[in-house]
Image 1 (cartoon, one colour):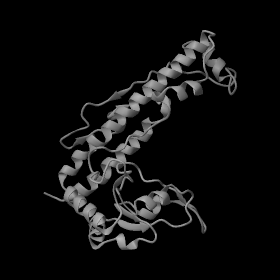
Image 2: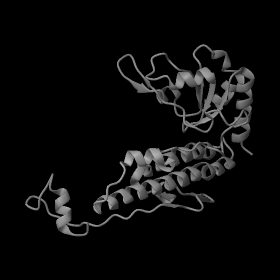
Image 3: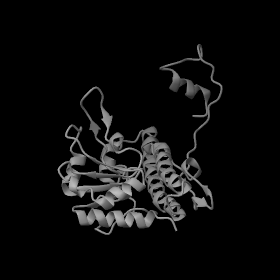
Image 4: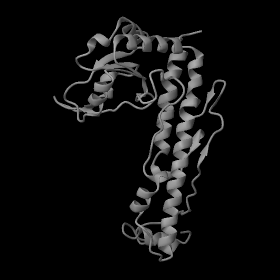
Amino acid sequence: MRQAGRVWELLSPWVTAEDTELIRHVVYEFHGLVANRWNMGPVFLLGDAAHQMPPFQGQGMCSGIRDALNLCWKLEGVLDGRWADVVLDSYECERKPHSVALVDSSVRVGRLIDWIARTAEAGIDFESPQAIVERDNAVRRIVIPPLDEGLVERKWGENYPVGRQLPQPLVTGGDATHRFDDNMGLGFALVVAVDREELVTPSARSILDRTGGRWVTVPSNVSDDALPSLLREHPAIFVRPDRYIYGVASDCNGVDALAGVLVEQLRRD
């Protein structure tokens, strides 16, 4: 791969030495790294400063975006004086486990790809990559772990979708199609089933007003049933600004309890 002839061979379907100048060619080396600490005082690490991922699952940029979405809504609330500084302590404990899991998974997939390439180069017959993946649970598919710590409310059990991202269907109809995220705005949101508007209690309205959030129902013209199905099981869902599910409830008492816990977690000292 360090020989110019091999590089031209790979480029030959598109360009040749007659119409292109080869200025530089190097072998790319990747790293699987996660910082030990993600913040110290007023300094926070995110993106490539916090983690370096092998490219085999396309999660480097995705993880950086998740870092930014996680940190920025918390910074905004703390800097404008609405929320306690302790809210920022949830950044590392929420994001670091995600990065560790995805780096580990990407390394395993990379080793599989490397083994397949070396085996093929040696002219040895091997199972199809799909057969290997189906047999090996370690590389079956990308699994984004839920938030187990931080600003999530797990009081009502581990089987609920708390700590996972809310499904985001397309909303169709009219002159344009848009994502359901656009219906929720940029702050906290309370998503309720279309026939359960009584679940938007005074306590819920108060916390939404204080956090710049809103409550919404899911229209009938969505592209898939994932979100409506979730609401059939959990008629009220508190969603964070980064679209992770904070908590779920099935009645007014549950909604009031969630609102109270959220206020306690966000309140200023």
